[in-house]
Length: 213
Image (tube, rainbow, N blue to C red; front, side):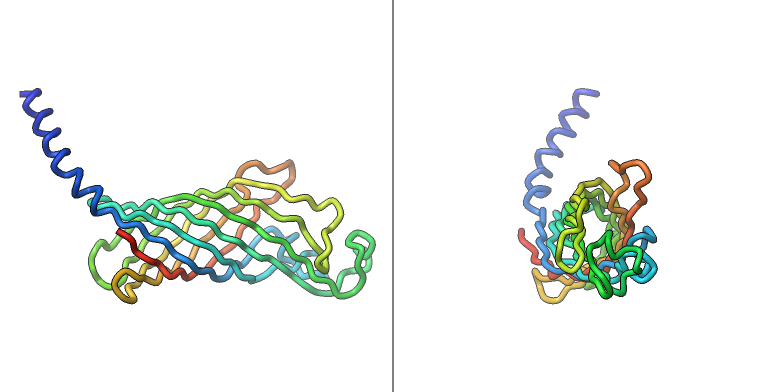
C-alpha cells in the first residue's frame, strides 16, 4: 500500500509540474515615491538644533515578483535609491565641524537591495490584489555631504535591515498593473557599531508593473 501511495503521488506531481511551471507569472515594476526618515533624532532634528534636518525626500527603483500558482506567497526582490537631504541655519558651534557658516544643506543617499515575500490575503479577481509583505535588505549608505562637499570623516558604510509593509496591485489594463506600497523600514538592524542608533523610515511608493508569462 505504501508503494502504491508513493507511485500515485509521483504520478500526480509529474502531471501537475507542467501546469505549475507554465503558470508562473514574472512581474517587473518601475517607479518610486517618498521616503520619510523617522529616527534617530540626529538625522531628523532641525539643522538649527544641531541635526541634519532630514525629512521627506524622494526614492526611485525597480521591483520584481514571481506569482506562483496554488501558493498565496509571492517572492519579491527590489532595488531602491533613497535621496536624503535637509537644510537650515547651522548653529555657531558647528561652523568649524562642517566647514560652513550660516545656511547649509546636508545630503546623503541610501542604496537599498532587498528580497522578501508578500502574502495576498484576498486571492480573487477583483481588479485589485491587496497584500502584506516582509522584506530583508542590504543598504549601502553614501558619504554625508554639506553644500555638495563631502563631510570630513564621513565615510560610507553598509548595513543589513528589514521592513514590513502593506500594498495592493490594481489592474490598469491586461498585463499592466499599478502597485501601491506603504512600508516601514529599519535600514541598520544588524552590523551596527557601538552606540549606533537604528535608522528607520516610512516609504510610500507606486510602481508600474509589467506582467510576463
